[in-house]
Length: 171
Image 1 (cartoon, one colour):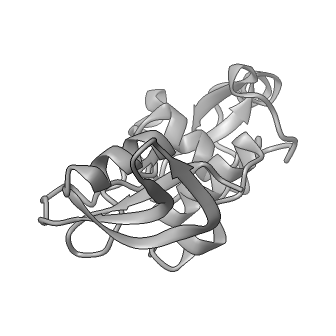
Image 2: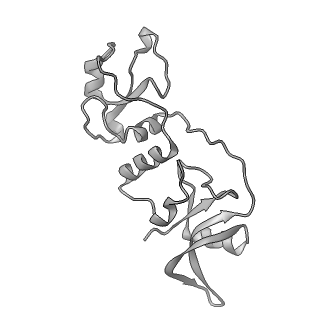
Image 3: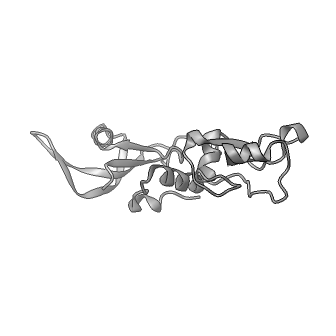
């Protein structure tokens, strides 16, 4: 059982997708007590007690007001690794983050730019082999959705997103 609580914005979507907006159960209970959120779903068999009251622990809460945030997927080294699920796009082996590099499909020296469509995850060995050349078969490289990054995070952490949360995480 997950001990975290998903936080939704006033429109019913997560505040952020990566990292996925969640708080620990203690913070979730504090948010409920201070009336900053509306409880959407509670953990079925989990109650916390104080000397004067008891609470079912929230699993999903929604802010009372809508807060505007950027919906863009931020380009970053970590997000490229998540998109590619920590897999070298040349040898298809899975690696730890420290063993990976970012490779430009079309090298910078040949006019390539740093963008979602021109970078891919590579192990150090494959990156050295490729060097300054352009591969004959280019790996798929595109801007990921929030859902792709979440799947990459699940794979990296070995933890699945709570089934209760799935319907609130839209692509």
